[in-house]
Amino acid sequence: MTTSEELKKIVQEKYAEIARGENDSCCGGNSQVPEVYNIMTDDYSGLEGYNPDADLGLGCGLPTGFAKIRKGDTVIDLGSGAGNDCFIARHEAGETGKVIGIDFTEDMIKKARVNAEKLGFNNVEFRQGDIENMPVSNDLANVIVSNCVLNLVPNKQKVIKEIYRTLKPGGHFSISDIVLVGSLPEKLKMDAEMYAGCIAGAIQKDEYLEHIRNTGFQNISIQKEKQIVIPDAILDRYLDQTEKEAFKNGHTGIFSITVFAQKPGNKPLNFLKSSIEEAENFCGPAGVSGCC
Image (cartoon, rainbow, N blue to C red; front, side):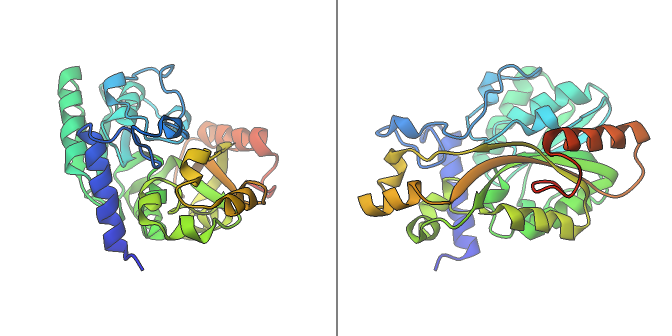
């Protein structure tokens, strides 16, 4: 059985290779299997503040586009990579705001700092650290974003508690992540490389939302949801033909979701109203499946 620390090391090594340009993609990608490239990522190019040098195609959503960042906000990006979401957040927060990117991988931090220096941003900083123990103080951030990162962390509940600790009262997060509906085949779940490739570390959608709810967050809603289809080029590495057909024709679903939630505290009434209206427009009144 692979331990949490061993899984973290696998993830750290793989993403260091990506930062150095030695591996083109997460999610099992390699140069011999081009079909698997970017099977989860969304197109960032239409967002203000986008910088292609910082986009390594490692996400599974557009959390910064949903994050309701306002001028002057302090924003934290968990698993900041080469700085993609940080630079978009900086555009939204403006020169009076502050953006902190946290990443586990030293090579990613180096790459992000180079990108920030090229752009001349003095209110964006990058800190190396484990998001299970964030290197930031309590009640610091107005907004926290993250893109396809919590699914790589063994102790997701601890990360959610850290998000709660570091948000200001009334602050909120918008996080894109991979979740499951139904069980993955055991061979996918047990393979450590597949864990680093975004899938095997995912947990059940209901469990994911329950962690958020139990931590004390309010106004929880799913801002976007899409199903992820794993190409045969990946499945063939783990499953024989019979197993592959059973998986593809079964009831298991792999989804990218973007989740919004707020830490209790003071917030302008118009902000709360817009959050509730957005949730109801997406999936109906509170209490309907998919909303909390």
